Amino acid sequence: MIELRPNCELCDKDLPPDATDARICSYECTFCAACVEEVLHDVCPNCGGGFQPRPIRPRTAWRDGTGLGTDPAGDRRRRSPYGRDEIDAFVETLRAVPPAER
Ligand SMILES: [Zn+2]
Ligand SMILES: [Zn+2]
Image (cartoon, rainbow, N blue to C red; front, side):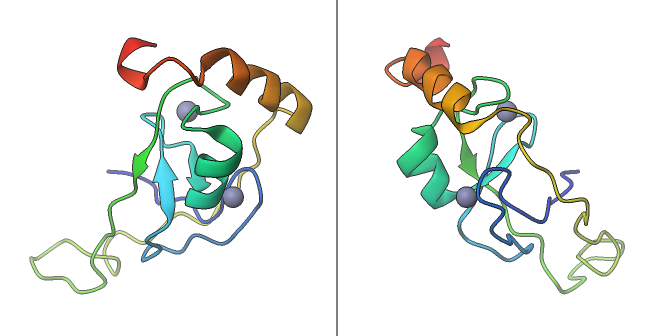
């Protein structure tokens, strides 16, 4: 089950569980769509992987034991440990390589 982290690791924008602009990598590093498109160019600065839209967990328990009431979103805000200059250089080395070939 994914954690549904509450913010973009780069610009700190709030990304609540129903955000349609949340993007995650395979490690669930979480960023907003604007950062992924304009700064990261589909390169996760923490692992080098690509991104996908984060699925929205239903607020309603449509089935027993599911939904945000049972499994609430995470509340620990994160920040990428890398600085902007380092991230830009890292992205530059990988952005031309499609995620499936990294
Ligand atoms: Zn962002
Ligand atoms: Zn990652």
